[in-house]
Image 1 (cartoon, helix red, strand yellow):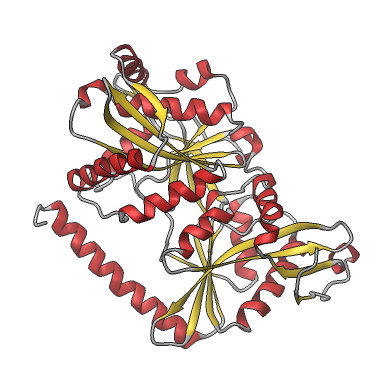
Image 2 (cartoon, helix red, strand yellow):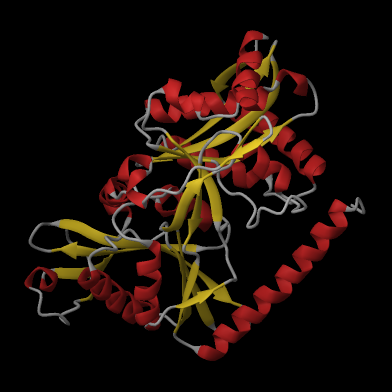
Length: 406
């Protein structure tokens, strides 16, 4: 690999680590990077190359930075780092979503990687590194309502779920390790803290048995009434789906991305078979659609939309079930429903959506959260202050939207 050397760690007595060099990847290295992400047990779509290009189109500068083993000629760790200016400071924010791609159980490798990464980012006027690792702090079953009884089986060790996908390191141990390395845990999150994921390792009969009976019935009802599921084939069909997205946004009173964002996501991820838009139709009419990503062992329900017509046909239930079946057929061991409310309060604004996701009988994953490493305190305070103001404005707009003011 003929790449410019960024940093040679040279800070450890471990001979296998002395062979590692931090390098900045170029487009010629895309295939190597994609293999690193896909082969990692926690490899996530937010770390894939196409996702970085999507964010580039909307104001971010993605860098793929990796540790290269000079003897083995292979990448052993890395991060897709998204850079963006912090207004009025002359400094940058560096953000690693659901990464880095790293064997967290190897403490020496972690220390080598971050020591090199910190030096690289400092040299480029980065004020703070923010990251949200794809590491759970806990995994537990979502509650299934059967009759009048709430069934909540006891939680199992992390390695017991999703074919051992998350068994390498405990979240609690990693939080302590990151704190010792100088990271600050913050409640100012970018990604949602909790999600529900379906274990796809059993056969379909077992997966269906774990669902609420009503959910199984609704999916079967949709199929028996003639609802069909197929992938979108053209940009025109993506545009039709976006019309449903606008209906969904107004119905549920939330903000969304412009059409250009979804278009680029479909083009970039679809071109490398990492993103698929599945459409639910009845008698030639589009009723609902779901944008599903597939990277490594994880299928993710990233975006969804449905219209107001023929909702009695339950197209969303069949759509989700067929998306799970498709992801399983592609080799995924996990199907992520992409976020639930941070609390189980039934009065939470997102309680209804969370309830729909709980009905599929998955596991509630609570991630370890968000961590900041501060290089320049003053720009960091400006960054935090700006975030706080934007969040207050967003919360106010959401409150007014729920009350029907716009």
